[in-house]
Image 1 (cartoon, rainbow, N blue to C red):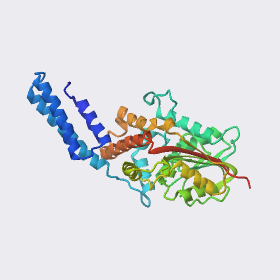
Image 2: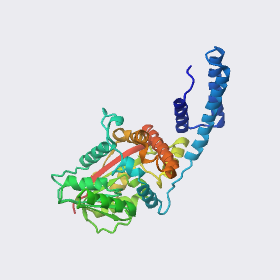
Image 3: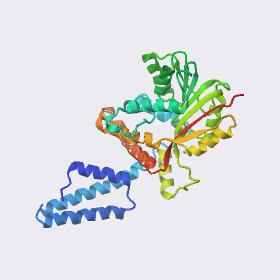
Image 4: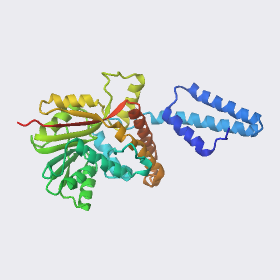
Length: 369
């Protein structure tokens, strides 16, 4: 057996935090196993017994410390409440960390089976995602070059500006968010990138001020997660879409529990995912499709799960933070927040991988009057 070095101890600590402990006795069991292994090594005169005891103490402290850290990380810090979404995104805009690592696009990327995320730029995966989402929604620059587009939940406006350039100068993209700071930053970037046909405004997606039948395309990428009333969210988007218009959305979904009911672990993990990043709740892609259909305004709804195409994004972001710590290392006031975000990214990855979460894609066209 090799003596644990510092890197191994850190990896052990991180793995234990992500996997969790069922009880203090499980910590002791792990320590006991390490004690036995190290005593066996010492008994064979490979290392002095005192070194073995020091190793046991280090492992014990690491495991116990991990349990304490996990208790802190598992306690949600950003639960949903009135104004919480705008507040959190304003703070993310101000500290710059989210933009540093995610870039202009606060959404997942798209990866082919052959692509390894460690060798692909995250923004390339995000641009690929937008292109694939356009295809999924039947959006074609050759056809939609004069379209009026609504981007619901635009973040820093990266996707909005990309759509505006992709569709051409005759298109008009209106993008909305609850965050005033995101609107400021998105507008700055639109000027820098010479994209005048993308406009940004603070607007509540559940009470939009736009008249009925205003837009040729309604685009919603990862905004449904934050909506406290999914039914009203869908109804508002269908209302402002023109007859014959195209609707496409991407959103994090929990699996359909009507087919596979949630067990105790599922409910616990979902509650954490709701509360850590200011989500009121998730629903399934099937439930979203039903909400669209229930408006009576839309033609046949198509739904898909893009977990396989997007799941690399979670660890890709963690990898970026490890590979390039400059985005957070000089901001000590944000250390705990960064650790929490990294931990939540890993929890998200695992929830999607085991099928608790799905990446819902929904598209439909509005019936002609």
